[in-house]
Image (tube, helix red, strand yellow):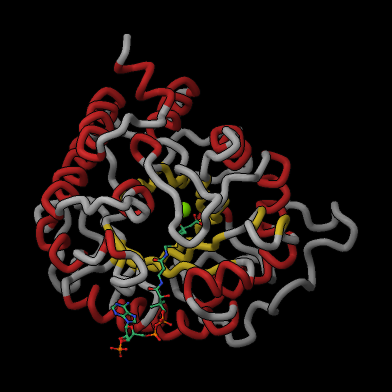
Length: 341
Ligand code: HMG
Ligand code: MG
């Protein structure tokens, strides 16, 4: 069956804007995020504390966060209060220091299932990038922060082509066992189709164990060996990840993002990443186009009777406003349909 409620993890201000050539003023970013919150989005990824030369568009992260202080309590130990959740990307301890200093209590590390993208995006091998994340995750958890672990190139990679499911699952388990509180499975270049989504989710949650030829048991690091088990962690069978900890992150390059989302919902996923107006791409993966548009997602969920708390008209108006700031129309079909009627 389908869930009754979905939490949308809005990435427009981060994944959407990170690739924009023209610098978006900090005040415009702050207004964008305030408008998204006013439209009912409760989790809004705000920015990235990465190297400013790697992602110049988000170099103003330290200036932006204080402008959002009215949305989320950015004071020490305030995690878990009922304001808007404003996670930020953090690749390393330098980024974590910068974020914690500003009171951030929701972070995301971002790993890759492939060596090519780990190199392009993080200047590291997969192993080196996981080693870089380990102290970040540990220190963030000690500071009371939530830690999302992104996993990119879960279905296809622009350099390596299709990515073997066991390779993806092995990195996913390492991120989870490191202490990530949520894992977001990324189709960075938007090539996945629904059957692949179902197969990966079944592999990770153990739903497919016994069904496939030797799939399931015994793959990846054994749970318990060096795994840090938080008290809030639900008990899981060896090597499996509870579906409540999984989110999906689709890009719409081949128009499959909604179909892929529906496949994930049918497997019990309740956290879906989307970008207002379909903004986005990835600066280190040339074939990546925009994310699943939040409006397209909300249109589908509304039709299915699945609650999101989002006011679709208000959200579309926000994307039209943002498109004017960027000087080109929103690629979201739903935004176009709602604003040209
Ligand atoms: P590096 O060049 O290997 O860095 O980059 P380093 O560790 O060698 O450090 C070099 C210098 O950078 C040092 O300064 C550091 O202090 C400084 P120096 O001592 O030479 O003066 N530095 C920093 N400064 C500010 N903030 C920092 C920071 N870190 C180091 N955090 C690094 C390694 C990870 C830093 C770099 O590769 C990087 O910033 N990468 C980020 C790339 C990125 O943001 N990509 C987009 C997000 S991923 C994505 O979009 C996919 C996703 O949407 C999911 C999907 O769709 O699949 C999430
Ligand atoms: Mg992305």
